[in-house]
Image 1 (cartoon, helix red, strand yellow):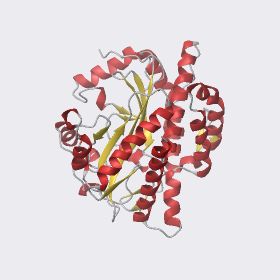
Image 2: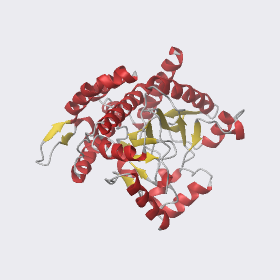
Image 3: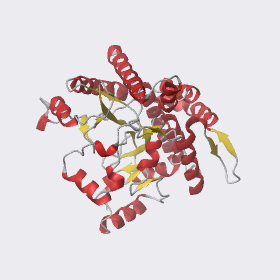
Image 4: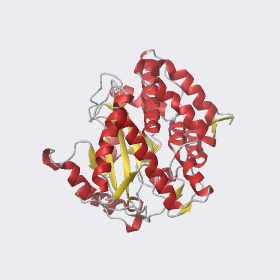
Length: 382
């Protein structure tokens, strides 16, 4: 039986996976070990508390502390990303935020040291070996395990919006895949990934977890990689469907949506008004549409097969959540979702580079510039 360590309110934590690229060629470079050694100097056990290794040595993860507001999380991320920038430069590397690197083949890259990573690759084989993906994960605190399950169920209906607005992986292995988020489809090949099953309560989640642990399928809840999952240790619901993004303002906008939605759902549950959850086949179809067409998707909205443009869904969602976002201090960040929907997320900008005569190294240069400018603007503002 896993206990849920409840949070007192809708606290916020954000995790961002960043790719390390060569400053000249734009290729992924496996310099994470030396970078992590630099940023770890002076910290206990020589490990930075907010800059971590990931499966591949071409990736680092930046995490916030437990934050009360989106603005606090944004500033926290910017400070750590600046440290990563400085350390990466000493290895002639830079950082980018994108769901996938556009052209470096996965089989050229080195796995990070550690028993957990080696076991992962040995057990899962090819799907894990090609997992050169980068995402953004948002944790929002909830007050009980049962509320966490109710929130996971309800948020799965909003998953396509998060996915479409964060989509940042149209290229993979040097090819335009035609998708807005190719990362999504690669990650779905792993076990215990994708849409969460509809569960009744925290007790049923424990039945699920106990079954898979006893069967040897997973060792702990850490290996349940659903798009949205409860995190009992942190007392949060973790939204894991977003591609990594190249600007802090985009990350903040999605974090504002997550915190506002979880707060709304918490109040609905308290009032005994459980939101209706779309049928499984509708959720699956809408996720595919968001991964394929991004903000140009038309989402299925009922059992009769009627559809609605995703941009209209976003506009209504922002309007509905603005009072809550105002209470939480993230109204401006939430309103930025309309800007993303109108102008397009990163996958649109990446394709614009190529459409205007650029190449895939040029896409990487553009991603580098976006993130560097975003970090500098945030650090200068503080």
